[in-house]
Length: 248
Ligand SMILES: Cc1ncc(COP(=O)(O)O)c(C=O)c1O
Image (cartoon, rainbow, N blue to C red; front, side, top):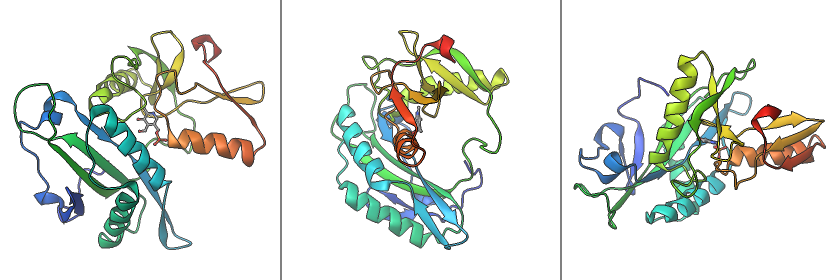
């Protein structure tokens, strides 16, 4: 993520488009202490040839956001369609001319101590310049982590729940300190779940194989793109089934 963000960047905070420097939360905010937020990540790729940005399936991201906010009973008071409109407005107003990342975030925003959440919710949508997340010009070194993927009955991995990302942060930090680019997490059954920040595919006997959504994975939209393109454009067999560690 860019470390030098323009404080004049226009962001949407609770329905108002304001400069980033004015978008603050208090130190006692519930989500800051207890991880009670749900975020999304939407890429927009800049095309030099067409001189415009291409957002990757924004409506589906916003539908997933709203649906997963339901797990934490966070109310996002706008429709997925309206969130798309807000995003387009942010892209226009900030006059981006490079690839960007859109970060929607909804969270429990009451400022008090006590874990039990109440109905005070906030949301924000921030769009910022962003290059490649992982280098994709050569292969990555990925290592199986000693940290296990969180279980659906503890914190659902299918949603981008803020607190759940402690699991990814621990695995990711451990992997990098051990010389890897990315961690691969196993779930409590010992099956391969996914990377710290990405879904996982394996090629075996000419088939593309990926764990099903019941294996404690994020229900990835890129995952769905890959499966669709592999079937439709490349004529590959795509199989969703549990993957054993030894298959890797
Ligand atoms: C744990 C995890 N898995 C998979 C993904 C990929 O998700 P998507 O393709 O929907 O952006 C992410 C992205 O943030 C992630 O954090």
